[in-house]
Length: 121
Length: 110
Image (cartoon, rainbow over the protein chains, first blue to last red):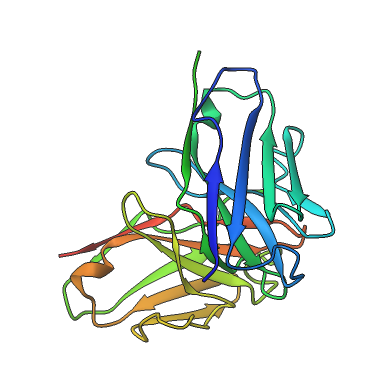
């Protein structure tokens, strides 16, 4: 059974960089059959796709966040990470990591439980 | 890129059927058979209910079905049950190799 778990600071100051890691267990992140994605959800609002990474390191990002987002992968640790720079209160949200089908995009079959990140001084 | 358009809310009585629409453009919903639907209960992570327009993952009730016509995809839930009350989101692959989600629909079981 594949499991994903987000980790990282729950509080980030404005203008700083938000950093989160997703640890994958029960399966190899290097399997080659999946993308690994980040999605966020502000309180009371809808889901927003942030971006994805493939095991090769190739990435796709939401155009509205592209200038501030970096997603990376560490296959030796079976982890992938998110960095979001120059954060503001608008970046306060629950952040999810998820597995997406390589041959079936938009198909997120496994999700982490989500982690709340608050941007505040 | 704008979010896919979903009705803010729908409602139905137990046993009835409801349909939630998800409207995009020819660059996303209409251009690819990569539309998925997610169910989200309060405080929980989304759960995949439909993928590739009309496929159900193992373990998802056959009361849930998906379809697509042109730039609009639809999720139909038949035989409504109290536990179906949740938020529902559609998502679609786009021509820019990115993803879009719908704004979400709150389903109320009366």
